[in-house]
Length: 321
Image 1 (cartoon, one colour):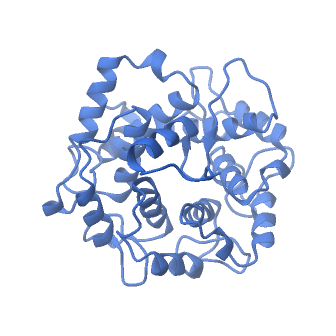
Image 2 (cartoon, rainbow, N blue to C red):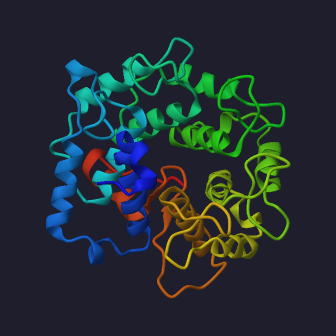
């Protein structure tokens, strides 16, 4: 049974599980908290959501869903890496079917079959899946890249769709996707994009998603990870961001979007990734060291190396940021 605040997201259990297991992985507490029997049970549950090629492929979010979803597929692969599964039960052909069928004529990706929803969030998931499987044949890569570049706003940041307002979350999706595709150098006006990302930090505080908005802990990840990928994370006022995030920590555990609100697993997880990136920079000391995190794939490097060992024929020459 899901806790009451999460019941309406019953078909997104896969992503909920990723937030929880990913946080434990970054806190280096997974082996302490999750027993071997639970690890096996979680892995079996994930594979229980795998959809055959005949039904569209991919992974669904829970038994409450009837078809694969690109975000649930992305998080399913991350969970399997975190749980150190050997991927022997992974239906790669069904994953290729899933991604290829979701790509649209304009290069974008829908979230699921017959869904009208398509934007850079789902493009990022498609790029991440192709990267993890080390197989770009499942998409028209150049068309997908061109779609992402068309989402650039006059401010040099990126929107959720072409013609819309730029946003920190959308900017991360595009920057991370192009990084995974080894095409980061195709971003026009990259210095201006870096300035936009760094300018989202409110003075002496955390990050906002758009100009004139209040800070929110999740943007410490969306902006922070974008800055790490772009190579300007060291220009963040790291200590102010750390203090902002910790000010939203709840006495009952977890981290809220802003101080005084109830914590939730999304903001808790993204805040932990942001703190891990600051810890890697040596901004602050902590009693329990964080694992190093890849901003581009949103995963610990230990779990990323597991993917390289089990899904790639050979590891890359350089790790993604």
